[in-house]
Image (cartoon, rainbow, N blue to C red; front, side, top):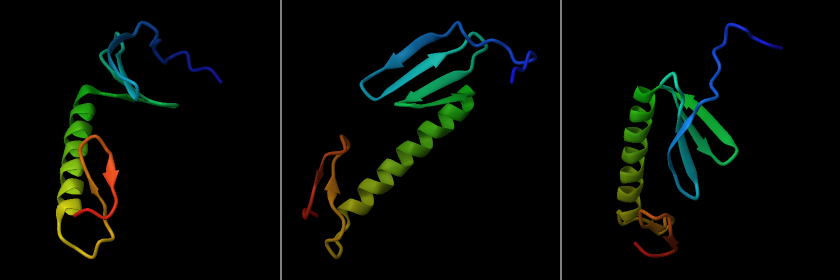
Length: 87
């Protein structure tokens, strides 16, 4: 099915990338976030909110992992490396 009212989004500029994530900018200003096989087209404000929410989630995760508890959680550092049994 073709939608001729949909603008073309072909001229994209790679803004940043690493081994896991890439971000492109469309000529219309929309950002395209690539995570493996998943791609999301987001307005810049949505990316800002996503970034803030992910940072808050990581901080909360770290806080929970550092709390003394029953030992069922593992301690992790910001790189994602986990060490079972350490609190």
